[in-house]
Amino acid sequence: MSTASQTAADVMTASPRTCSPYSTVLEAVMIFRDADCGAVPVVDGGKPVGVLTDRDVALALAEFPDLVSRSVADIMTKDPITVSPDSPISEVEAKIAANAVRRLLVVDASGALVGIVAWKDLADRTPTCEMGQVVTEVLETA
Image (cartoon, rainbow, N blue to C red):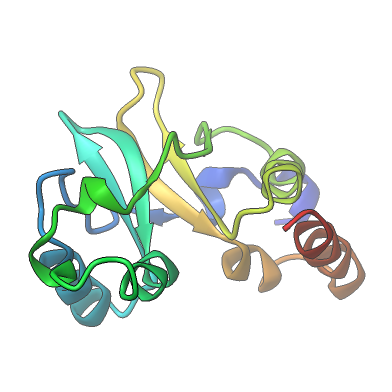
């Protein structure tokens, strides 16, 4: 299948592990370890309300001595950037670049989380020169 005809559903990780805003940071870190991932979507009632990344945790270490027992809501990135499963790859790439993020959440028509797309998922399927442009745009806006 050519990149031009692919959608977010074709490249996303379906049904990613999640946590709630009330989960502790330690619980989320255990998901990072067990699922071998660097981001955990934060959902409330099945709908995403944030994303917690390993970077969020690392940066919060200096601010919160009690970090492991704090709730995810204290340090998560709120209002995650989303796309629909039928969004073309070009739209996914554009949203990643425009928002200077490394991951997008994929939500269905009702707003429920169905997957996650990381820029590394795109890198495996996108010509090197196109992916280089996306990475450059992310780095320039970060």
